[in-house]
Length: 166
Image (cartoon, rainbow, N blue to C red; front, top):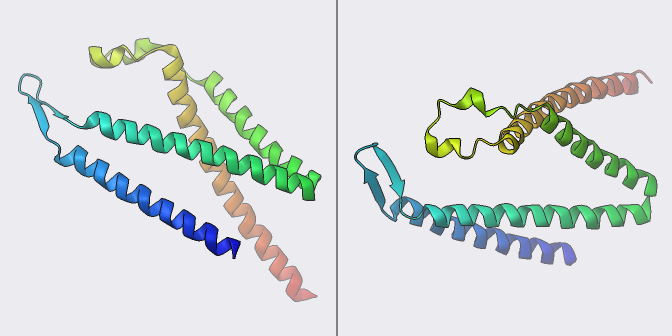
């Protein structure tokens, strides 16, 4: 009974978020455009609404992820503390990866001076290192996914072969 109730609630939440997202995208794309003829730039009138909606969705995602992770960890810790600590080790590994990739990132804004003056105001060492952190972390996680995929295929074929021989 509880599974169907939580599925119903999450389904309705998904529908509401999709409808709101469609409305916000409609406002953004059909809300009018200002043209700057000198620079040839097109600026949408409802850009702030789209950005705020994006901020809200990211914040809700982060909050939900943290809440589910905390609840899942506490439930697993009650049943099997060893498995829960192993899961916590993965989270700590992710934090270490983010710290290392941040430290490896290049914070020198001098290589990006060809950008416009408006974008140069955001070329601080912190944001440059943060963007490098995101890029490097994605690359490392992609490589780890490929390695895990290959390892799972090899391990699965070895288990299947050894299972058939017995």
